[in-house]
Length: 443
Image (cartoon, rainbow, N blue to C red; front, side):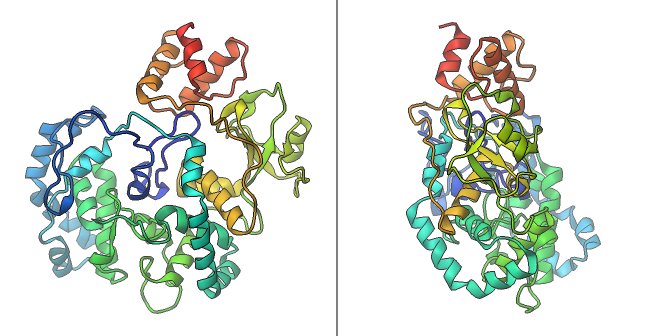
């Protein structure tokens, strides 16, 4: 579930870099299965834990540590009662909702999975922004027009963005995940390398069912605990969920009014600017200094225009004084995008550039917009994880990369790649192509 170079795996912002979207995206980025045979499915078709050390190398992800923690699972859960009591959870409800919980150790494999093969951003967009999903989105917008009208009036959040998040997160409620949120978050609170974080998620999930907003059987989702059509983590639910229809419950799973209002409230509180778009596709001129393509280097649109950037549709920019940063997800060979404040808000919902771009573009298509104008470099091949690791290792050997090579590309890797590209006189766009790897190898 990773895209190399400028694009990362969609990771729910609600999960704070845990995988809140594994139910939908897990198969998209994993590529061909590994050669070794997989464990046989257990009862109900679910894969069991592999019994192997986690790929992260974290001491709490060794097979021995996982087995030891699993053996202490009941004591760990019981030991959370004082914290639950401080949150107002009754003892009867604590016992009722934790009775029969057992660790789902398959989550340990999912938490530490590092797929060898990846999808490109254009493949990602092809998968998510398609005619079938657009048709369903238009049906949803029409069916719940009254709810969208009321929410848009109350919050200023664009209905098409809300509908886009709904469509991309769960394919309009058809792919929400099937794991018990209580079991998943309890497992992660007691086993593995993120126990402190998931202790809060588990206790928050208990608060939700204790209050009566949702029933435990409604709270089914991803292995990391994200649930509902727009994938709220329990702590995000506490912060953002609202009772849209006044029935006394905040039901973001089966009540479209609450779902739409809560998703909009999330975006509004994260800084959504009413009446503004998320960004613009732009044509980047030849010879452009791609060192400026950086989230930290925002300028006014008027300043970008002076550097030669133009809208791909040839239309004028509506507000030249707005600040934006340049995103070039496929480097100099692909389209550029000037990203505004609302794009940053989408990134808070899920801090992956590919995800935020898909959300913005899908929303534009829902309101009647056209596909992107400029072509993607579809002739380019995405590097495998082994190749990405090799690229980082060579960059480190040459003094460009100071991190620990791990095959995962973040800002530090892109910066190192740009500096290398600048040193050999090619566009410093940070795009990890096979050509760049060959140049590093000296071919």
